[in-house]
Length: 252
Length: 192
Length: 192
Image (tube, rainbow over all chains, first blue to last red):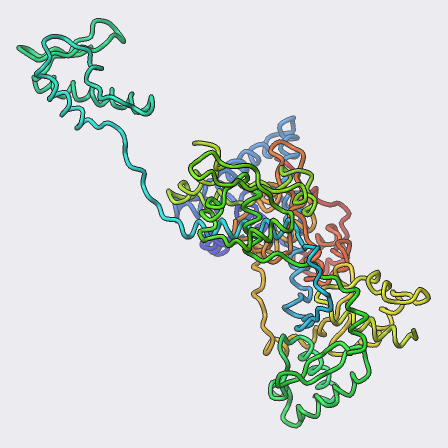
């Protein structure tokens, strides 16, 4: 393959439907029977194309790179002296060649189908078919295909007509906790548990935990500012709060 | 173009057209030296007495079954009725979301559901009431009938293609719009 | 009923129907001593070379315009859009590997299958669900429809070329290497 070929492939990379598509195209450029392609040559060409493409566009899709990594492995094994690993690699190479053959056969089948005169494209059925049926309401023409099509239609229309509305936030914020702690502080004679500052009536465990975290943050904030003191007797024990009189004590 | 070729073309054109073909439409396809009226006349003559005849209709000509054969055909050609699109969509939604209430079907289709549509599905014995939802107004729940399974050749409802196999979700759920939809797509009875 | 009368009747029956007509439908109209297949064969002969021809497709016979008239008819008859290449490839894979699941199709093409492609094939009534595979997740199996055969003018799926014949690609074999015959056939799914 010449350098100019590589360049044009790099530019065309977006036109390929995935790595297998590119590999098949490269195999075709070897201009031999697919059964006789050199997997090694193919691997080198693919890696060259991917390397070239990466120098132009760093963001190359994952499946291209996964295939590149796999082919690198394959190449390294194929180059090893005879041994168990080479055998394994040859199996893998056969599997790859076989996949390419199958894809190639399906391409050819698609081309063959496209070449047939298609109803409604190349040949036409009667434009005004006559219905001599006396309509018998007892029978319905129902098939799974039309049921599924109808469902898809309904769901797609629904997606189009839908608007996004964010859910209202119900979590107790640090700001709210600060206000509440500040408001309640004056009436506290001595150390009280932080949990005493939580508002009532939480719907879920999650909401309660969030409120506790907000209240703790509020307490820490106020302790930093010297308004309160925090204390924890032991690990995981209740966190106690009282109005500050002197130095600030850090919570454990 | 020979006269025979013109005849072939006229035959194919009249056959394939969804509406009657006038001489003017044909003449656009014919070379100047061929007269469309004459070609159509020759075509009519060729089909005279056959099972299908060329008749004048709506400002042009059209193929029609010979009148004497129509009664014979009437007994045989069986074209089963298709459900209207709205009914088919409603049926599909009931099949996939059952048991489901009428407002829920309307919510999914994004439009109101006519009594006629519901009646037609009931008459065809494709759907039936499946109790009531214990919510304000106690709306009727709808589901599919055993006859529905028989009509579609299904052993049971699990034979319906799964929604994920219809590719509804992977592309639909791109971004917050999709997520919103997905969460409501789940069975209406199952809470999040 | 004379043979000529049988021919008229068959002509009218096939002309009237929107879908291919099977020999059995015709034989119900004919007296016992007349063979429906023979009548249809005589009808085909009568229409050979005309602007409208009798062709076998999708399990029956249908009148269709002669392929050579397509360029002229396309000027006046409305044509739906052709399927894009990706859809044709997917259709070919489904036709050859059916019943087949979506992941298998993706495996063969080496890339994911878009919603749009599957939709377009479903909407054109070329493919349909064919039950589920009894494997984990019970994925939906896809296959071609009767309309697929009618659309491409195939009598049945056996009219598709054999895969090993498809592999003798004139595009890959440059030069006069045409005689080279390969017997082996790629396995449909070779896992890594």
